[in-house]
Length: 101
Image (tube, rainbow, N blue to C red; front, side, top):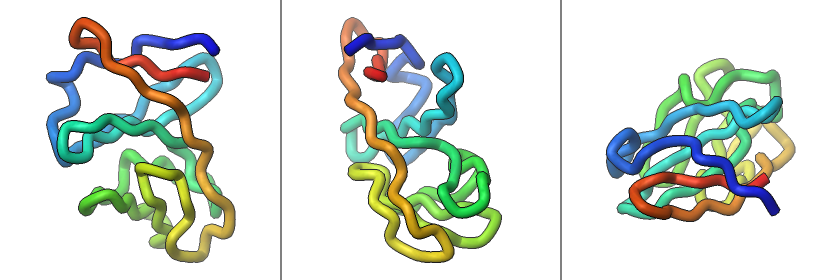
C-alpha cells in the first residue's frame, strides 16, 4: 500500500474537510475531533463533490440531492445514494496527512 501526502494538519482543523486528488482518485479528508479520515469525494448518486457539501459531526451531505455519508466509514446514510463511498487508510507523520491507495 502506497501512502500519499495530501495536506498538513494545520490545513484541516477539527470539524472541517478538504477535497484532494491523488492520481485520478478524488478523496475527501475530514478532521473529526482530531482524528483524520478519508473517503471518496464523489457522491455515489450523481457525482457531486462532497467537499462542496455540508459537514455536521461525522456526516457529510452532498449539496446536489442531499445524499449523506458517514465520513469515518464511508457508509451511505441517506438516499438518493445507494452505494457506500470507498474508505482509505490515513496516517499522520511529522505534521503531514498521508492517505493510502
